[in-house]
Length: 170
Image (tube, rainbow, N blue to C red; front, side):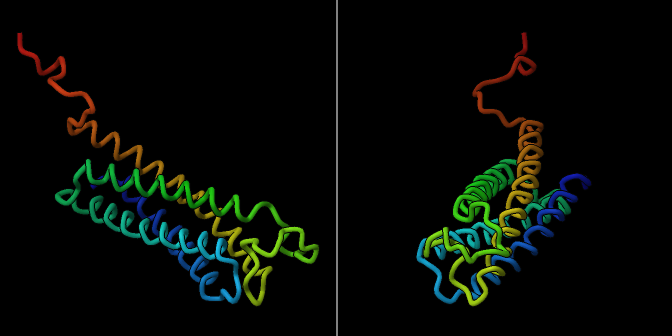
């Protein structure tokens, strides 16, 4: 059992627990958010659910080596990394850089992602925190993807076809 992949999966699970709570609370307290705000938040929750599957499968693969299939982990980690970066970009772009404690100036427009709750400042802060943890999750998935690529290459995986020089007998 390798220690580094195991630690990475536990870090991913910690970030996922926090993200599930933050984004789940944003969804639960949604009163009258715009359609685009709901779409961004729902996509983020989809990414979190996908990430749960990948992180749990990765944890099982790190504990039980017989379950670990390097190509499957490579595909799962690549998908999770891709979706996580997209969700991070969507949340950051839709939120911008507001001062959540001072939302009175209404310069964001009625379709802004942080509007649509009984307490818009709380929703704004939860989305800000969710964005930060989404980027931290991206770093953890990027590290896991790097390890999956190295594991895949170590088991003989290659994008080139044919034998390598060490396999050619003269």
